[in-house]
Image (cartoon, rainbow, N blue to C red; front, top):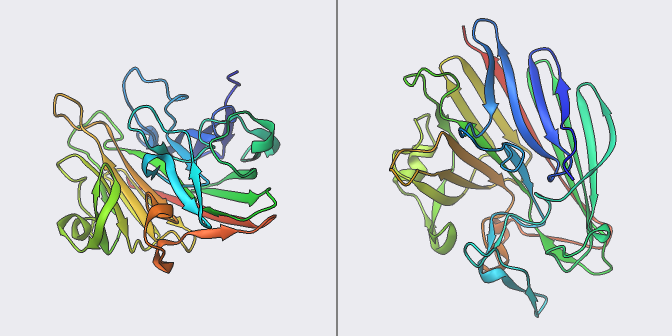
Length: 307
C-alpha cells in the first residue's frame, strides 16, 4: 500500500522519497532567490503520477537490461522473469519494492530491503539493500549498499536512474545543457550492446556541454568519468558518482508526435547493460559478491543557483 512520502527539507533543498516504491526519489527541488522552487531531479510530465514514475530510482542487483532475461553464472544457466514489454529483465529488482524506514531526521533518511521477506523476487540469490539520503544546504548525498545474503556468490552491478527536466521554468528558451564525459559508445540495439564500443559523434558530444541530442537516444557508453554536469540558465548542478561508475546510459525519448519528452535520463552505472552476457573483461565492472560481502556506491549532487 502507498505510504505518505518522506519529506526531507534543508531550507534551500527539499526532496520526497517513496519508501513503498523502491525507496525512490519522487523529486528534488531547490530554492531560487527570485524564481522560487525549481525542479532539479524530475520528469515533469503533465498528468503523470510521480509516485509510479519516480524521478530517480536504484538499479540492483543489475543495471538496465539482461538480454532475454537469461545469463550463465559459474557454468549454470540463470533464468529471470522477463519484462512483458520487450522480453528482457529490466532495471534490477528493487525499484518497485517496499522498503522499511530504519531511521530518519528532518534532513536524512535510511531505508532497508530484504529480498527474503518478499515473494517472486526476480533474482535467484537472497540479498539485502540499504539506501540513505541526506540533504545539506546545497547538496544531496545518496548512498546505496547491496549485500549478498546467500550462501553462494553472485554477480552484480549497481546504478541510479535520474531524470532531469529539459527546462525548469515555463520559458521555453531557458533550456538544459549537459555534459557526461565518456570515451566510447557501444554498438547496440534497444540499449543492449551488440558490438564493440567506439568513439563516435554522440560520445564526443556528451564529453562537452551541449543541449540534449536532438534525436531520440537510448544508448550505453563506457569510459565514463563519474561526473555529470547540468546547466540550466538559473541553476547549475554536478552529479558525482563513486569510483567504479565507468558506464553510462543516456536516454532522450521523444513523443509519438516527434516532440522531445520534457526530461532526459543520464544513468551512471558500475556495469553496462547485459554485462553478465558479455565476454568477461575487467572493464565491464562486474563484481562477484561472496556470501555476506557488500558493494556500496555513493552519489553526490551539488547545486548552485545563478541569479
